[in-house]
Amino acid sequence: MAQLSDDCFAHQGPLLSVEEAARRMAAQVPAIAEIETVALAEALGRILAADVIAPIPLPSFDNSAVDGYAVRHADVGPEGETRFPVVARVSAGARPARALARGEAARIFTGAPMPEGADTVYMQEDCKREGETVIVPAGLKRGANRRLTGEDVRQGAVALPAGRRLAPADVALAAAIGLRGLKVRRRPRVAIFSTGDEIVEPGKKLGPAGLFDANRYLLIGLLRALGAETHDLGILADDVEVLTGAIGNAAADHDLVLTSGGVSTGEADHVKTAVERLGRLVFWRLAIKPGRPVAMGVIRGTAFAGLPGNPVAVFVTFVHVVRPLLLRLAGATAGPFVPLPVKAAFHYGKKKGRREYVRVALRPAADGGYEAVKHPQEGAGVLTSLTETDGLAELREDVTQVEPGSTIGFLSYATLVG
Ligand code: AMP
Ligand code: MG
Image (cartoon, rainbow, N blue to C red; front, top):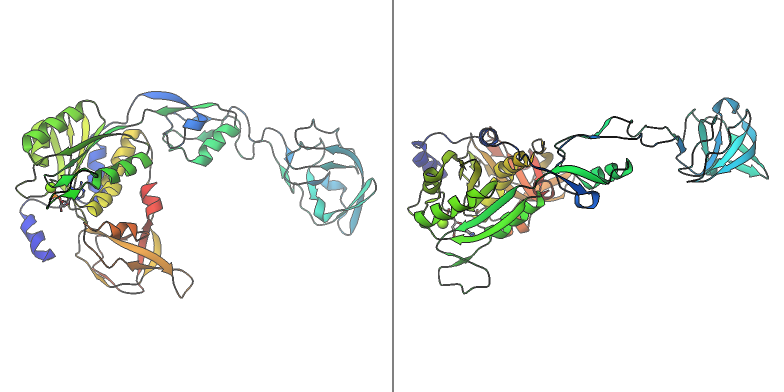
């Protein structure tokens, strides 16, 4: 059956690979140029517009990594124990103690500045204290437990590169070098429509052949996780005039217009026609399952993506072709996903030449690794196949068969959605 339907499509030209589709769309749209400065607390998930150069070294002074005793390494005997008079005490935030003379030690605490002359810190657990004397063992390396100025970031170095999507640790690093705000690009403005005469807003009355709209909520969530500003523009009827009007209007004040449904070859599928009237279609069929029909194009400089109607196909095509486009618009440098190798716990036969994504749950395997269990329902409309699994197994174009025990690539939802 799958064979037949593919042959039926064949006269409409080749299916485009996922990578080629992402590349073609990226070539159509420049990154958003507007830049704004945001406070650190608002910077999470934003895209850095310029390299962040460290104005100070981090740390900005040599300091101790532990609570203990600072000494000059050269004063420690090669074996046995060495006794030192404790001549100073320096705590975190305090001014550095006076320089250590030969044979002296300073009591020191984590984060406190190293006294001049000291180069090594003994952890207090490894020392014995007798009154004002500390006794340390041999065998510690010179420089142990000392944090050097600039060992984390050198002054003047690029602490964070332009194009970075700011993660919590990135914001922490910006704070650690004393910045209050960061230059980021404006968030992409994205318009979202659902299409279909059968689609009903949740909470409204559901007719005998109606279906509550799941896709807008799926897309809003996916877009917000990527830092986009989302504008929910509701549900459109299967009417080419309605679609043309609404999509054309949305294109005027957004960076990306997203629809779902209405892109197959059925008689009620008018999204493609609307986009061809308004602008230019870049491609509309992808070598991907689920989700083959995906119409992407450009409408007067605004990117357009018409996703399939089935929610699982929406999810899969979003993460693989819309996400790279959105990140490109946002000015982010983002590499491809890296699937993690896991063992398959299922049989699967697959057609060569297209990429397939199988919804799988992970469970511990006998060999101490993980194995992927396929969800029993494969339909692209089955939302529980997403909610009851952990991620997607990626079966690349050349794969034709998966057997239990085969190594497959796994992409967690945490990775795909983040
Ligand atoms: P279409 O490509 O428009 O034929 O849609 C394919 C399937 O996805 C049909 O069963 C639609 O009813 C369903 N579908 C389309 N849009 C939505 C939506 N917004 N939420 C849930 N299901 C949808
Ligand atoms: Mg439809």
